[in-house]
Figure (cartoon, rainbow, N blue to C red):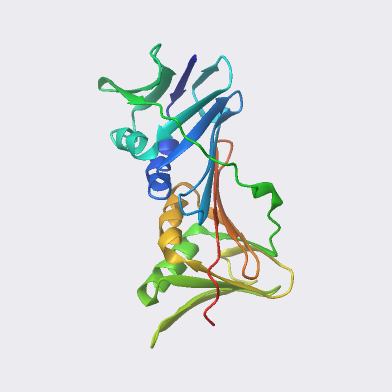
Length: 251
């Protein structure tokens, strides 16, 4: 194992890994000439995380050969929370077996070593997903819709037609709804094959939407009673998407 990677835009890791760690507890990071990637379901198989940080995002990216690093996400997140905005982050092999070295370069150099672990992960068939609708909208708008729904219950319903997109939640006596038409500035793109509708757990969505701080727009893809995919991008730097299984509709 031989690699050395330096990153100045530390938010790409410091603002994503702690969020991902709330959803999955361990995973396999692959490092190759294209960058760093992680594709992993959570233990309940309700969601899948797909993270890609491109080699072009790094100041230095030296990788002798493709590496697979099994890591506990909580351990990694704990170190990344110690990184400040002006710091640089260096990830490298240690020369020791089963260790990843992380150096935080700022006022001095702080160094951490965390263990590599054996992780068994089945690769989810993400390329087989076929969504009935695709909506591109401002991330802040989605944040508002999720926060509104959280007041009402523990799930949210997405609906789309060729002319509008809705997010709504219903409780025993209360309800909340956000509706966007084609003319709304927050709705950047709307594609729907007829009318589609599905319900999803807020427990996951309220964690996933935290990534909005890195991406002012997002893409939502879903179908009737079908998984959804929520995608965020930082151009030329990062792509992060989550796939989430639907709940059986209560309506």
